[in-house]
Image (cartoon, rainbow, N blue to C red; front, side, top):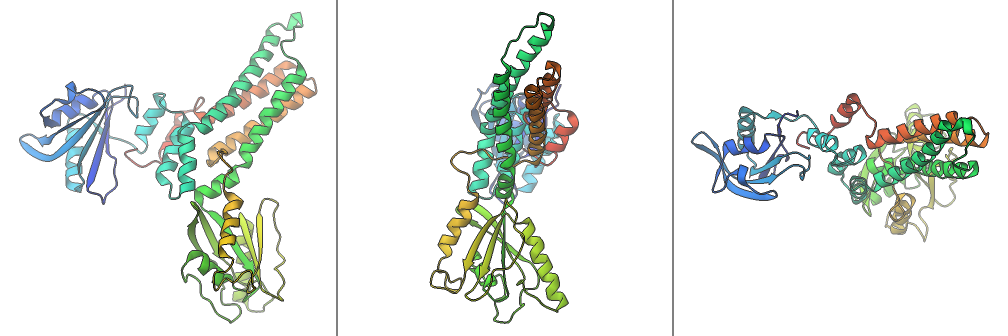
Amino acid sequence: MHSTICAIATAQGGAIGIVRVSGERAIAIAEGIFRGKRKVKDAKPYSILYGRIVDGEETVDEVLVAIFRAPHSYTGEDSVEISCHASPYILTRIISLLIHHGCRMAEPGEFTKRAFLNGKMDLSQAEAVADLIASETRAQHRMAMNQMRGGYSEKLRSLRDKLLHMTSLLELELDFSEEDIEFAKREELVSLAEDIRSETSRLTGSFRQGDAIKKGVPVAILGASNVGKSTLLNALLGDDRSIVSDCQGTTRDIIEDTTTIDGIQFRFIDTAGIRHTDDKVEQMGIERSLRAAEKAMIIILLTSPGVDYPNIPIRHDQTVIRIVNKTDSFQALTGRGLEELKNQLVGAVKPAGSDILVTNLRHYQALCLAQKDIERARYALSAALPEDIVAEELRECLAHLGEILGDITNEEVLNNIFSHFCIGK
């Protein structure tokens, strides 16, 4: 039996505070500290009562109390939300009264954990709640909302349904192995396995993009000394963040700042000019520039007329934008060509349509394992290996997809996931 929990659900600084209560005795406990024209215990679901929170004969605050009855609540349990004035003293008094009447303080993420355990959402949707709270840009918000509403879950469950179909056919063949009955043609199973492999590959391949949008897309600005890197950074940020000088080697350390373009957060990194130098401090700055380039998703290679682009290693998964500064088509100092550059940056990372992106490292790791499982199953089918070997690989693939959705999990995993939530959610 779950205990009844309570917590403050709003941040400090506003005019209104909300205290959440959830559990079997939520309504009875709220009834014990509320006084109004109507009683909490008699209230209809989704109704709001006006009254007072009292401590004996003393009025603590005038409040609104919202009532949600199981299973039609966020947690799937009887729940109450008390809206009061946001005084830290008032909020603390209400929490103390609730605890005195039988509640306990909620652990981080416990309301959402109960929603998952009570079947109100799967585990990937529950994790998206934390991402939604942390979202700072339109792109981050859109990805979290899509995942929380089940778009990601639907894709994974579709994969699991296909896998279950394959596994059931093979299990049937194993049951009738002595009769040598074939329930599915091998070429059809190979084709289905390839479809699943292709989809898991697409999802794992989206992680770099999804993770970058979630955390801020890293963009390194590289070029020789004095071609306008710092000027470009200031222009992109709309602020004099980086020192601009005609002297070579002005930037000797990494300068990083963020800005949002078309709803996507970019982390711009102004680096030391790449050139041959005997200055040890400047050499250290150049080495840091090259390390920053390795970690960047997008590299802006900047030069000016008569100056070569820097010769740096580029990975296949990095987008490179080459710009010649101080020309008729681009001038960082005046902003000429800046909008076109911003469009290129957004175009390099913006999801196409409603494409689903993987943003969670735990999901990515599970999908990588599932992909390896289905590849082994596909090989086993193509090589006409025994059905029990194929079936085992399919079961492993199902298990790894189930870990993402929460169909297969354990208390340690759940505690680790929800410990990163804020208290009250």
